[in-house]
Length: 453
Image (cartoon, rainbow, N blue to C red):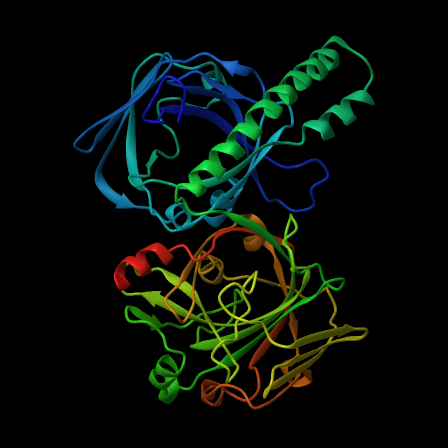
């Protein structure tokens, strides 16, 4: 809830550019706000408390009119041409810089990454803005795009204050440097005031029934904490039988998936082994290697492709979730590294083992956007769903291909569905990238519970 506005809503405008980080090797762009305003009084990490500015948006049919301070314009989306957005632009929004070097970390979901905005034609009604003098032509923007449905983001605000203060303390003294140091001290004090308030508000909302959010990091910083992925084909004759064997809920169907940018799209089952870490302590949980088997499904109502976690053990109570809350984990996971990655996974009557040589980091493949987008919902076989938010670290991570002929995979025992996939993986990768996810675990339990009642 925003003070002075019981609805908790405000109309906001931002002027922004795209930048690179100092010393950055890649061409990956990042978003930088150069001016922001809101219809309500607000705060930002450059100016602190900011008074309300004129900021309105209205719609009449296909014409959307808006005013940002003195700038008045309209956009006509009558052509209704849906646009395909470049992932580079999407993931530039996951790291938002402000003019003093402070930055927000942003996590995205399908409401943003899969939504296709409408192409519009903009008309300037009156006024201008201070940045217009730098533009080729204010009257003819390259793009005028309209998102008609909501975009949902999770934001970790105002990072890097201490880092900027440390850098400024080493800079030659000047009025500009002194002013920045003073302003950053003010911003730090404001942050120390509102962050606890947000935390308390979230705690109260969770106590009232709102879904909690958990962030965790999957380490794939090869070769120190290697994450391996093995992909197994499912024959066309076994697809329906596999769906039955893994107890796939109604409304879902198995779909092909390509993991790398040049992988062939196939109905597959993926096996991943990785180190998972949490930013806080949970009793009984330590940073440890996790083993996950997944396939890929599409929801028949939403057409959204997601992950579906499946269980390889004969024991029905076997699962690898974060806290072991719903199920029990396997008895033993042993991981050894040297010149190869060797993994042993044991349960009461089942054993898996993997051995894969380490590879050169000079040969890399990009990850397919289709595979990235699938990491926004994870279904379990009880129809429980985890909602995921991710950032550009997943999209920009690299795959290091392993010669599948040099990978040893074996098993003794296991669930019946394992007989429906190929005995050996048709492709294997090390994952080179550390990725953080924010998840709402077991997000639909209340809905499922109401259905049972």
